[in-house]
Image (cartoon, rainbow, N blue to C red; front, side, top):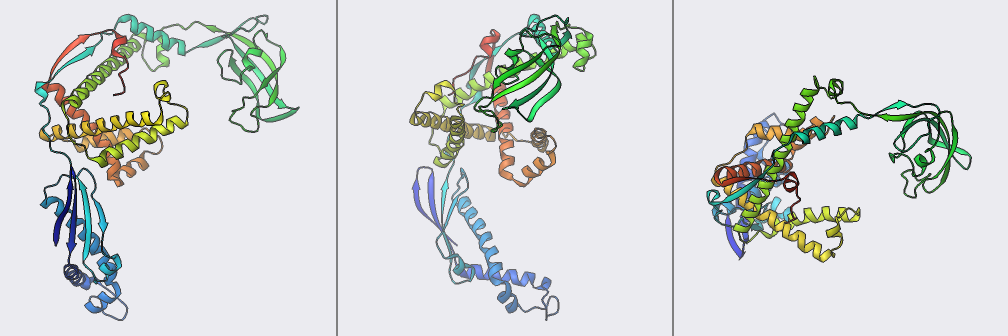
Length: 446
């Protein structure tokens, strides 16, 4: 085998690898002799098929497997011999005709292009200083959250027959919809409770019922929106014959043990305690996220080195595909929507470079500190991911087990968090009390 360096430009190197056809033939002969005792063909006793006949029948197929194995072995040898740290899968460009190689007529010759991870010395975490923003949870904030919970348990009580419905009331109604006198599918319902002002029905429908009383019958005239999901109804005028059975007023929510039991708690005090723990966890999580952002910003500012172009290109493509999808759906934020494609591309390419740089820095710091992910940690992440798809848990688990690249995507955030925790432990971190608004203040994109 011959390995020759052809080009070297920055982090990218190109090699020519040649494996003589005689070496491949020797592997073929060895493989045939190894399998001969197991070969069974019609007209021959088991294990007695001549080598020449096996070569004639299966030689090219076996050689194809040998060529693939040799490609992997030789490319890995080229990487090891040259002490390369690949930033991704090497690019292989076969130079010889594949059929000639598998027929033993030509050497296996190919070019291998490799991008390497840059050599750099990561910053020392013990030399870093950070401020961790923290907020104390106030009793009144817990009470406010409790009130929000109570309001989510709205109930309605029947009003007097003479009471006229107003915005915020609920009406118990039957209705049948028609277009040009013809009833349409899905346009009828009985005993439906509709909260006026909730915006859950076609625009104008709820407004038409303001002022009705129990026992009233009314033709509600509306026009379906042009973008209505049912194409056969979009933009058409409709009439809903509506009968009002009851007008109901909202009753004030009572924060008591009965309400707590609706949330699976023993009593109101248990619910308050659970809310406090949840809210404290939210504050702690936000504080940790802010500190992590400060750590990443510091690491980004402390490291400057050449980035593997392929890694940046792949990261940018992932980001840019998402940006384009959001743009096509009209979901870009105001700042991005006001930018040209050229400006957007420039901004997000910087983000891609930042992500690649930080990924390399965190990986290097983790390697030096011997940070590892246990099987239990990875299994926990896999189970958590599977639970996001109720009813499909087993299929999700099998997908990740069969796809190492997908599994690596689960591993990456765990590794990142462990390295950030390591930096937090070694760095000088001082707490600073701030208001809740400051803690949840949105950080700039970069």
